Length: 352
Image (cartoon, rainbow, N blue to C red; front, side, top):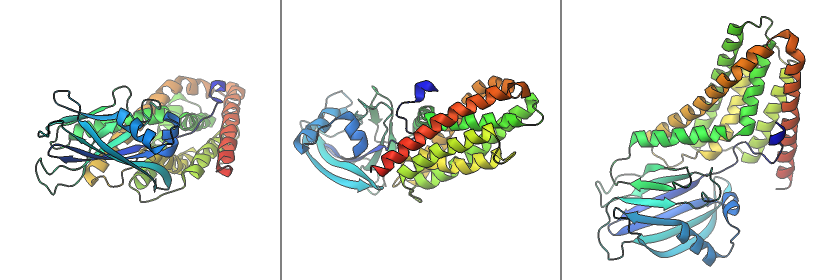
C-alpha cells in the first residue's frame, strides 16, 4: 500500500476517436484527441508543429506495406463530452492515384508515451466497397503499444474481433485502477465480520459482494458509455475515493451491519461512471455498442474474479476472531490511502 501513495487516479483517461472515410484512392481521417492525454505525450502547442507530430505518428499502409502520402492536416480545438480535445483531419492518398484495397492504420498518437491510452477506430463511410449508404461501424480498438496497428479489410466488421478488443480493454482498465481494486478488496474484507466465520460463509459473502458490485457498475457503465448520462468526471473521481473511505471505516467498525451487498451495489453505480471515462460509445451502431459493453464487462469481471481468488485464502484466515486486530490494521491502511486520494482529488478540483 505504501508503494501506491503517489499520484493515483481511478479511471481518468479519456479515449481518442478516429473516424475513417474511405475513398477510391485514399482515406479522409478525422481524429479527436483529449487535451489532457495529449499533454502527457507532447508539450507542442504550435499548430504547424502539432500537424507534423500527427503526421509522424499516423499513417496508412496498403497491403504491400507502402505508405499512403499525407495531404494537408487541419487542426482546431473543441469540446467533446465536456472535455477539451484536439480535433484534426488529414487526407491520405495512394502515390499514383491507384485504387485502395484493404489497408492498415498505424496510429500511436499519445499511445507511444501513454501506453494505457485507447483509440476507437470507426469506418464512417466506404462507398467504394459495398452499399454506399452503409452506416458507420466500429472497426476496432487500438489499445496496446507498440502494436498500434489495425487492419481494415473493408469487409463487414468481425464481431469476434470487436468483442476480443473490448475484453482486453476492460481487463487492462480495471487491472490498472488501483483505487477500484482497493475498494473491492476493502469491501471483501468487511465480509469477514460474519458472526459465523465458516469458510463457506466467507466464500458465499465474497461471491455475493462481487455480483452486486457487477450489477451496479454494469448499469451505469452502459448508461454513461452510450451518452445517456453525463456526470462530471472530476466529482466522480472524488466519489470513487470517498467510497473507499466508507468501505474502510465499515471494515473496521460496521457502519451498517450486514450491509455489504447494498454498499457494493450502490458504490458499483459510482465506479461504473468512472469506468465509462474510458469507454465512449456515442455514435457507434447499436450492435457494436452491445458487443463492446459485453466484452468490456467480461474483461472487468475476469480481473475481479481473479482478484477474489487470490485474496480468498487471506480472507479465510482473517475471518478468525483472533485476527480482528490484523483485519482492522489492513482496513486502516486502506483508509489512510483513500483519504489521501480524496484530498488530492478535491485539491485538483478546486484548482480547476
